[in-house]
Image (cartoon, rainbow, N blue to C red):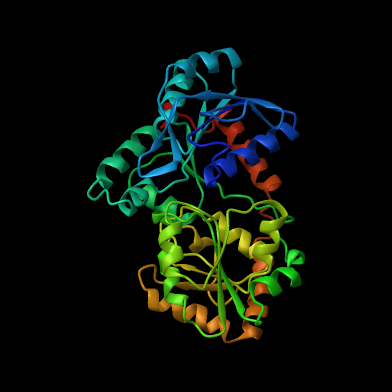
Amino acid sequence: MKVAIVTESFLPRMNGVTNSVCRVVEHLAGRGHEVLTVAPGPGPGDHAGHPVRSTPGIALPFYRSFVVGLPTRQVVAVLRDFGPDVVHLASPLLLGTSGIAAARRLDVPTVAVFQTDLAGFAHRYGLRGVDPVVWAWLRHIHEKADRTLVPSTPTLEELRRRGFPRLRLWGRGVDDQRFHPRHRSPEVRARLAPGGEVLVGYVGRLAAEKRPWLLSHLADLPGVRLVVVGDGPAERRLRRLLPEAVFTGFRTGDELSELVASLDVFVHTGADETFCQAVQEGLAAGVPVVAPAAGGPLDLVRPGHNGLLYPPNDPAALRAAVATLVADPALRRRMGGHARSSVHGRDWGAICDELIGHYDDVRHGTSTRRAA
């Protein structure tokens, strides 16, 4: 099969969309399929031995590390030369409109992946009152696709309520070897908590849509050392709010594996997650999770089993949930044991094989715009 992936984000910018696209490209390449990735530049010329074609992109003025791909007629020529059997649209917004227009012009079936809560994103950056416009635009894009894949049941229900057609559930994979309890490191723990403190950690972008300033409500919990893994435009403000916390910066590879597995409690603060890969990675590492009762975490965290949920706009409930786990090592151990098993079978190989099944469906007419 020849698969063209048109993505709104790609390397070197790392985020949930980029991570998913990279894993899909690697899996398809490993299965012997041909893959072409079209993404906003600048970026690499290939990934996993398959070509990447760069298109014009522009950084958002309020978030310079977030580059948006611009619509371009170049996509039609690129796809015509490649001759795909299916076009995969990763979180389509602007560049994705060129991808879906090119696919329709070339009569190639499309699978669109809904991944980013753009209305929530806009709201967190002070763009009030734009929700109807954002949702109308996204529905306009996705109603042209042969199938839209949605990462969690809360998001699926939201899109159904808003009139998005031809929806299917498709989760996200986790590298269950990269994120594993065996990476828990006494050396890392001794460095981060020399006094034997309970390590409570956040892993993710330090940006408005993740609401990391809620961590300030945990700053004075006795016997706790806060660890913040990641970077972003909110870092300077967060360092002022949390002068006693450990900030590691952005980490990948073995460093990230050891940091996550060495935590005692994994905390997430974002309330607009369509899935929340960071939470799934924390669970795979055997760490109990405290997360908002909204969006993707509702599918991942079973309260009292592998973690705790709190009302997303209630900082006192966040603090109480973390304090409960901090005070009870036996409860943390029990939940940590359940955490790993709760993501069993969600490795990227299994998830990407599901994706290939969706490709086959639209190629063979199981779900088409003509039948809508």
